[in-house]
Image 1 (tube, helix red, strand yellow):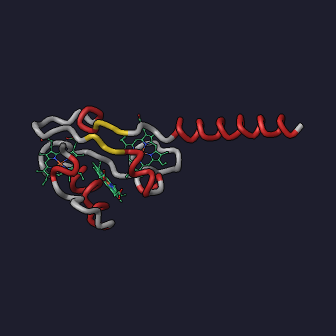
Image 2 (cartoon, protein in one colour):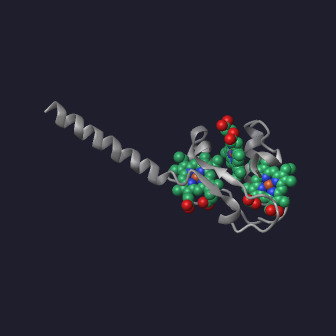
Image 3 (tube, helix red, strand yellow):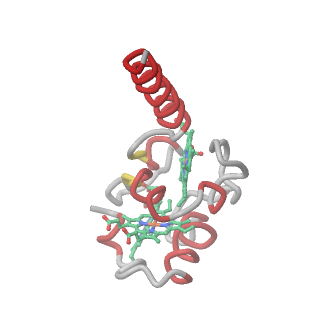
Length: 108
Ligand code: HEC
Ligand code: HEC
Ligand code: HEC
């Protein structure tokens, strides 16, 4: 009996963690590709799971399961794009991320 209970527990834990993974989205996201950004800067590979370790989903998404971004990215071209102005930079400044606005942190 004890073994059966243990086995069921293992299955239960596996099922729950696979649901969490299924909704957590990709580990990294190529934003240049995803948003079809035109330009010569090296593509930004966004470390998605690394951000999830530090922040609640709702810092960036409307709900705990992800979905669209809370900030609507309209302008993607040039230095004054909405990633810099509305999304990545304001939070990096607010949270005092080391080198959070240095080009090489995001454009490798
Ligand atoms: C620091 C910001 C940030 C946090 C925190 C964050 N995400 Fe995301 N997430 C993004 C960005 C940026 C994208 C890519 C843009 C897009 O898909 O619109 C994305 C995309 C996604 C996608 C869609 C992927 C696809 O292929 O369409 C899912 C699902 C997702 N996130 C789930 C989550 C969940 C669940 C959490 C919390 C555990 C979370 N995210 C936390 C920024 C974040
Ligand atoms: C809501 C807050 C928030 C937003 C929005 C956000 N970041 Fe961050 N970011 C952080 C924090 C906090 C860290 C520090 C993580 C740590 O200490 O490991 C970080 C760290 C990073 C790092 C360094 C990771 C490493 O390896 O140390 C990169 C690269 C990065 N962010 C890219 C981005 C990009 C690109 C965007 C926009 C698409 C973005 N971030 C949006 C909060 C944010
Ligand atoms: C916190 C992350 C982050 C930092 C720091 C950052 N950028 Fe960006 N940048 C992005 C994202 C995200 C995009 C849009 C996606 C992409 O182009 O891959 C972008 C796009 C751009 C673009 C438009 C696309 C292109 O290829 O021309 C330029 C220009 C640019 N950045 C220049 C810079 C310069 C110069 C710096 C340093 C002063 C810098 N960025 C620092 C995240 C960052």
